[in-house]
Length: 102
Image (cartoon, rainbow, N blue to C red):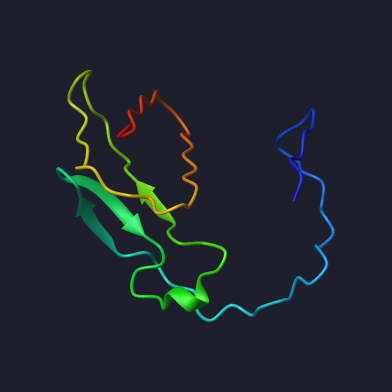
């Protein structure tokens, strides 16, 4: 799917499904369980316990926070492979500094 560029990002145009796309019904609607990752930062994991075969094209969908750390205080996590999938991070309010493992 090509990138979509618009003047007003609060409204995005509807894209036609790609050839071969298929509709899938929602299996369930639940609240993501809360827990902690890495050095103790809060996370809500939307797909916890879901069979990987049912997730395509997603692997994880995690909500980190809401947190308020002082400079130099943020908690991280040890090195871990992403095994070829893409990570997308967005922030509603604040600043984020990411340092990858390589």
